[in-house]
Length: 277
Image 1 (cartoon, one colour):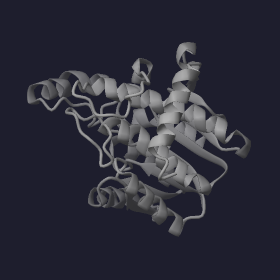
Image 2 (image 1 turned 90 degrees about the vertical axis):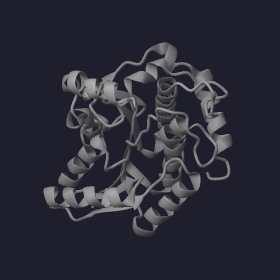
Image 3 (image 1 turned 60 degrees about the vertical axis):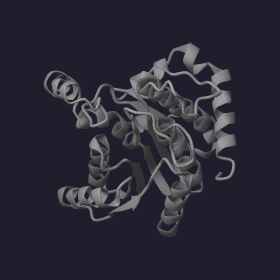
Image 4 (image 1 turned 90 degrees about the horizontal axis):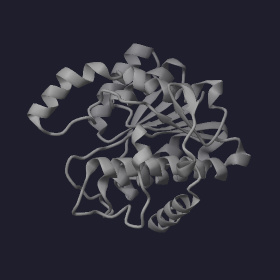
């Protein structure tokens, strides 16, 4: 039986990813921040899909030690991973610092997923699919030497955009690194999706958003469809590509070919994670 690991599997789109792969007969690890919330969603999905091969393992992507513990638990049960969906994401409205001292958005969205993917790599086999969730905001990201550090001038959208650009560059890095192992690494842009991440923590603004904005954008199922497509169809037999609306989209040259930013990112990442890789 094929095995899939989904981060943020009890979230809005994560739940849809889990339902789709469970329906397809995968053995699934739901990597969830809260064990209790994950278990509740897991039971719902089991009843819906009639797939009992689903389990929850707690994962805090903001902590390198807890990521390492998660991978150790996975390795105790599984000897291969066929699909890894780096789906989880955060968009704090206020500046936060991770357990390791890094800005929370970049720590969860990028650093955590980078470490997770690298530590799981011994379990990857021929035809393994790795799909990371980016965002249309990657276009506005920028990789600088202070990328991982907390800042007094916190802008949630700048931090989010930077983290998604970093995930795109990680996709290019892994695609090249594992090109001779028949491992397929891509990323997916879900578009504008009505999820809990879209909130300003302002009652009036969030209420207006719920009434006027959410009905006009994609549902979680619609947003999840591209990542599911890349993970489960023949279209996913490529590497280093960005998909949107179930199709490969062309990334602007100034982003895709910015080798300086790509190498800067990887160098900084390896330095930060050197005691864990």
